[in-house]
Length: 286
Image 1 (tube, rainbow, N blue to C red):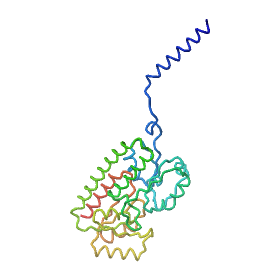
Image 2: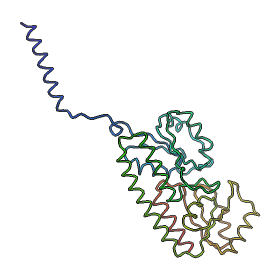
Image 3: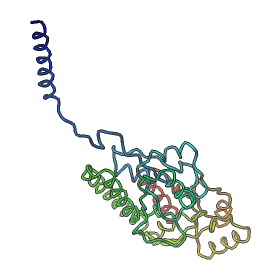
């Protein structure tokens, strides 16, 4: 009798548990309910591109941190450990020195990592890797970000597409604002210590004259020639970046009676930074 009673209690308990479990909602496994997509990028502006499209579903690691130079930087061991965990690497693909030296090595570290070339479809300027300094180029680049995220996480395609469309609108507004800023500028030539701004200049019908050429420090003779050229063309603006020594630029600015404009090509806050750079540059050139 006791055995029958015990068996009855066990069966009753199983039934209770089964009924109770039927009220717990089923949650299918998805990328949203699991860990975020681990994404690697080369430079800080790309972090904004990925976060704008990927939203809360991405965790982004930048290989060349803020304040460092992507032409000379070498990754730390801790960063290489992060590469081991990454699912996607969004490469600039524009020939920037860091990727030329390291991208194949990073792929060897993590052969499962999807590598997306974000420069595909961009009209390149010879030997100029700074493709992200054109909002029109970035529209192409974020399209590749969307495609890469969908490849890894197709279940959330709609989410990524909506984010992409919203960011494309931001970029379009930025482009039109910058066009308006330079619409009344007559002397459209500026000097730049490091020639980062070629794509920006192309977009807005400006001319960039570099002090540094092909990564080489300028000589006294080349600086003297540049000063003469600037005086002849009545150039009054010298653009400098925080990643480079600005002494040569200061010499040039002083000799031509020009203004120095600080412009960071690697700021993560891409839209606001480029808007600010365009405002300062257009005011200095007016």
